[in-house]
Image (cartoon, rainbow, N blue to C red; front, side, top):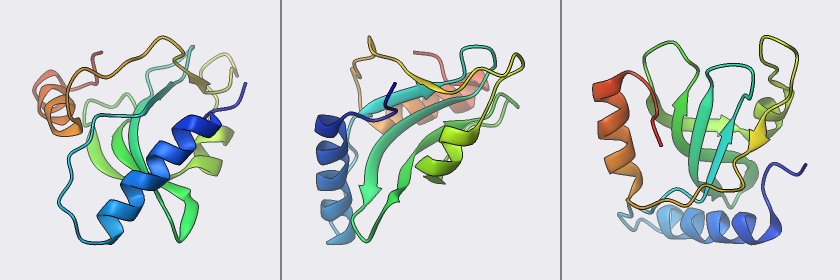
Length: 114
């Protein structure tokens, strides 16, 4: 399975262009990635137009300290859970709020809950 679809990639690049242009944006997450046999979850909103392997979003490695930051898609693709399963894209995820709202809720809960 492709971690990010072409349509998602284009939407994330557009958010990245807006951010790189200095616009103060708070978009809804475009994609949710997760380890099916672990506790890691990523809610990603944008890709760096200068290096589209770098994404920005809410990252939760399952250690009760989710944080906003940048991550390489290629590194996420290498992650394996407890049983060795690769990261998957949640095909049923649809964001219903901006990333900042997910971040506030995750900080309170100690994990991303969608």
